Image (cartoon, rainbow, N blue to C red; front, side, top):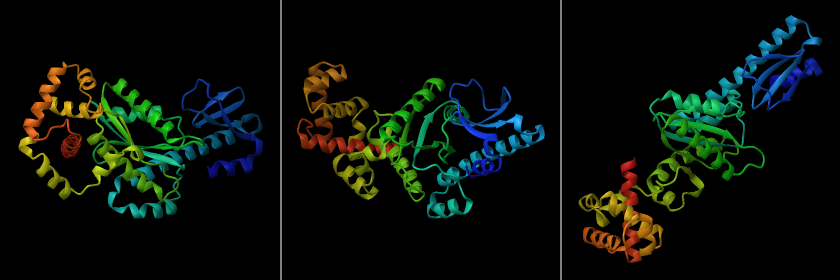
Length: 323
């Protein structure tokens, strides 16, 4: 904050920066003994020594600091909204960031939250409250009404730490709002040029993760594995593969029960006993389902090659439905 450095140069030790995590106050300036404490986020305060300033000077200084903090918050909203909304002009983002002097805390992670809640405003308000102590964060609503967020990465913080933070955010929102949801993040952005790439990766992670890893709630672009590869296949290639392996009439015959059987059978390494236990069904019921899947598709998923082909086809069908 350049304006704070300039104030300190002028006023010396009559103004200082303090961190007081346990102080029981809100977001408004307050008096503590003879000092004016002004919250600026992340449990940090600018402290004015009123004993060494006139009352008028202290009041004017408080207004200037509050304006500076407000401008910083507005800047965060502007740059992130620009990043999220302007899909076709990402190449202009870096130039605009430099020209406008946007204050962006780097490195950081761009993420997108898809939440199915009754109220559209509720999740944003709650998320802003949760992140109020995270200096440099930003929020924006996408064109699809998903909530986009930016989280600066602290020194020493790993992507696993960020994933845990995202999981906690999602769990809090889901429990407070009685909603369901999922969250996706791109690889960390180290500089301005990385931000459009990080945004695109978060978008791909949400779509690919939803299509191919439905059992998870947090998707990271760098850990999508096969899902990332499949998502990159052209629509023409996908349609040709599906038409050959699992055309519409065959796909419609595979009920949700049969689809879950295929996924569980693959997950448990084609082990009959483990798959039956996982599905809470008798071994003979599983064998019946496997025979029925072979009858419907013409492929016996007890053969590894046939299992892989049917599993991939179901994943591609799921992706198309999700989109």
